[in-house]
Amino acid sequence: MARPRTHDEALRLRLLDRAGELISADGPKALSLRKLAAEAGTSTTAVYSLFGSKPDLVNALYMEGFRRFGARMASVARSGDPVADLVALGAAYRTSALADPHLYAIMFTKSVPGFEPNEEAEKLARSSLEPLQEVISAAIAAGIFVDVPAETIAVSCWGIVHGLVSLELTGNLPDEFSVGGAYETALRANASGWLRP
Image (cartoon, rainbow, N blue to C red):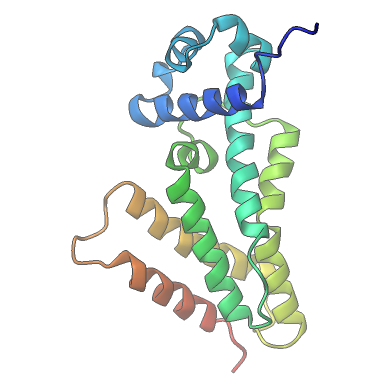
């Protein structure tokens, strides 16, 4: 009879989530493979078997964050209205950040000093924003958005979304700021600003 596999995908995801939580709560120095294994109820051998080294673990965290983020972005249905589509993509961005705040900092900040994603991870990160680029490029080509480089609009959209989400995650928004309604209003105003007069 075959020996049951103990280092499966469920354990890999549990370790990644716990590693992200440790870094998010206490900074990168809090992450040791021994501590991670103990907190996840497994052995250090399992951690090494699944990830290799600590830098490989951080790279896997980065990739898992972008895998989840990319799936949420790709699942946004296109309506044909680029303003509505950009708002929907912004909502998916926020949903992803709120669902996985422990991965967000690893994905979008230098929360782990010295970490540089490998080529595969960088490619995955770039591809996660393809839905944004596609909506913008199609709107420019159709004459709906002003004729500027698509990257200009994409970075503008990303900047407003990232800024608001980051402020929300760190608790730095004013108490009277209602994130729910104001977030969508801000995204819609930004996207509408790119419409051709």
